[in-house]
Length: 290
View (cartoon, rainbow, N blue to C red):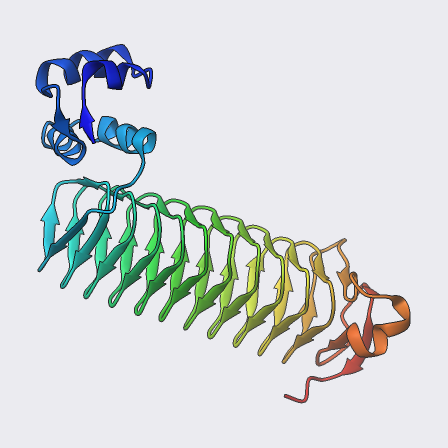
């Protein structure tokens, strides 16, 4: 793809950006060359805008390691070692890394991410496809994932966690904002939240669920320890906790919301050390035996 002033003007760029581009990028320059020119001049925002307008390429950049102030690449980035970017890291397609990936501002990836280490973003972490890190995942801003998110260690999100797929976390999931997950959530350790958690399918947590506001799952909810919420607890099917189940003051506990009342004995079971206060639906069957 070659760029000309006429070609760029058709995308209605801002006046300042168009003037700078006209002066510094020659007509006929390649797409990635234009992105690199913008990044090298410190106009990273313009490079990200350009990528959003013209989309990804099939180009692959392969490196032993990457250290840079910023990178906006239209294709796939493959790095044998670590990726350390002090500013913005954005690719049109995927990122593969044999080590960890860190960005001082944000990480935006058009397709999948697969890294052998940890992923750390000091701002937004946005992935169009699946995200998999053999170590932990942490973002100071929102985490948005268009597929499944898998973290071998902890998953820590200081903003909103929004997943189109499921979450599979080896250790703890710590969410400072709301959690919205279209599929299921499986956490090997504890799930600690500060806002509401809503999951389209089931929630399975090896430890405790605490700190969340409203807790809601389309299927069942199971925790190895306690389930404590500041608001309502709602499960489409069964509820199970190794310790107690407790909703917030003035709120209820609901099981079997997505099944018929006649099937509650089988599909709306509530297992806990004692009957939850304000159990509004479902059938308490006693302490969890598993």
